[in-house]
Image (tube, rainbow, N blue to C red; front, side, top):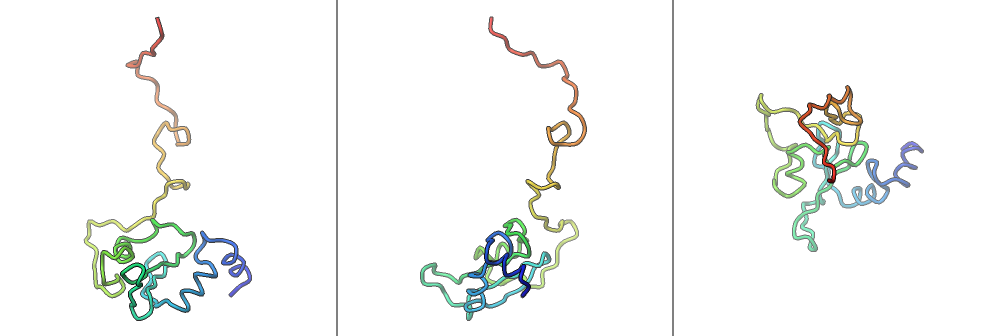
Length: 137
């Protein structure tokens, strides 16, 4: 481990994992698989049921910033107990009309800005004349 990784894990919670998560994963985690974004998925060793939850614990260690929309649909279903079989154990083939998953770009430079918006590109279209401002009489 590099010193920069050690400092990042010690002082930030939003970037990949913390020292506590690293220790918990090492002690209690069983590796399940990796998605196309490099996120790593784990569950409780031996698929033990957590008595406080009533089901097995599942967690993800993000590759980079902790952004929930960076989890693809198949892994999202597995993480939220909607599927018992993780995508790494399935042989799912996407249909030709399905687009690849993209994380939500809101708040980034890749976010959609409609034409004429204050932070968008281009100029605001001219007023069409169908608006008349209200004035008190």
